View 1 (tube, rainbow, N blue to C red):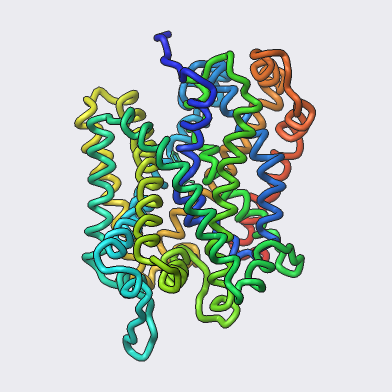
View 2: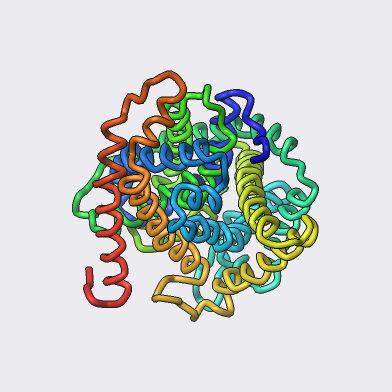
Length: 458
Ligand code: TRP
């Protein structure tokens, strides 16, 4: 086996994994899902899942990587030959995510440019078209060429960086960027929360109301957990393969989770209360566009709104870019492993594929808005649903099975204990991975399939 390079320090490992975890999932996806699924109810379900289920799965994935020293495709095969397909399935997830991720990256780029050039007033403007009042964002996505142009730009940028491999530079950028992102998110959230009209929205976001609870809440929260923490797609296995034995796995996982959840929580605090009144009035239906419609209203009212808007979207842009780079890098390395192509050819193939598959997601907001696969709102939501709510639970289920019943939880426990003999949540981990998690995922999967097929209705 060739010598793997290692992260030099524990903090280096935690930051790199957190850099992969923090992205559009926290800033864009979490707030709109929370708004859709009953605010506080969603938050509570998400937090419970994060400290039990997410914790167990992240421990498992990183431990598998560190134990085998291999990335996903090889690692699962090394554990048990029959489970090689799991690595392949996990690798398919980034391939589905990357194209639509870049579509949103394009929207973010457009917003950054508009804040920087024209200021906060323009972005908050509404235009009446055919008697309907449309937000700046809605007018933007209803055009055909412009969103696709920004999408291509974003893909191009990602591809150039992946091609030249300036990951070292990216790492430095992340180190500066992450703290600023945290400060800014917390600052904007504090501003939103202290507005006189915010109280009801804040209560909606923080206080669970079980009237809002349904099984789809759990389903959505679980999909979000996988997405946000980059689980069930082989990423954390790969990161684990670079981790040293001296670094304590359990406390690293705690730190990554805390960081990721804190950012998602503040992003929700910044968007959900601000959107609350228009959601209650029925003016806004929370969905993928929420961040782009609600936040401009906040920035318009804020002192120095144009500057804050520009800085905010610049940071979202950078967070999205670092994530899209590691998504593309993952796919490129799969192509490199499986074919004889060189790095340049592999990059070109992946870029062409991303462009081709991403365009329908962009068109789903204008000329193809009538296409609603599986009855979902739009094509982008469809890709998001298939990867997060169907494929990732399947992968997570089999990961639990392979650990619980084939290699046995003890193998992972020993790997965690390899550092200094301690594993505080050993019991929790063992019970979760062997019994609770797989049963739970299977139940939810059956339910969603049954619902999708129209066998049951909620
Ligand atoms: N977790 C990232 C986010 O919250 C998205 C993501 C999923 C990702 N899988 C990834 C990023 C793999 C990098 C690599 O936005």
